Image (cartoon, rainbow, N blue to C red; front, top):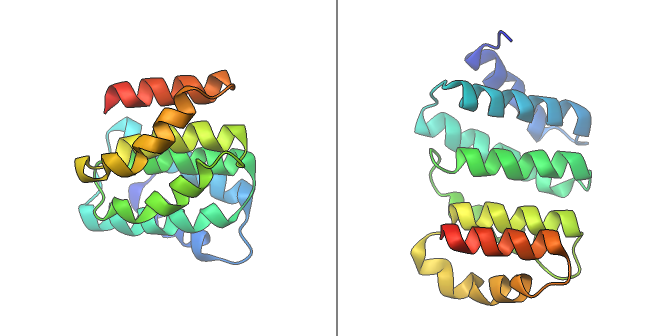
Length: 148
């Protein structure tokens, strides 16, 4: 697959459009993750701008788009700055009233981006998730807690 780094970053403007186009956004997120896994480097500024553009996609309820958002946020968190800003969206998705898929993925993403000063704030959520009836949520909480 021959993807150009600068073309993908240019196409990322689609994240700022209204209404959100889930299919196009999902494909672009897949391209971004592909570039990262391929070893392409992004500057901190590029990654941070892209990170915050992607967070606008939390407004969309499309399940497969949301899963790609979680994955991309996790991958960009290592090179972006101020990733803590997205924690409120992730905490909202960790609530017991949220979809099971949202909760498990939100737990994984949050544990990847959290810094040590925030651990007491999410400890309650993780403890509740560990004893959750849903195996996907409980295992996500256990494995993510282990990685902390």
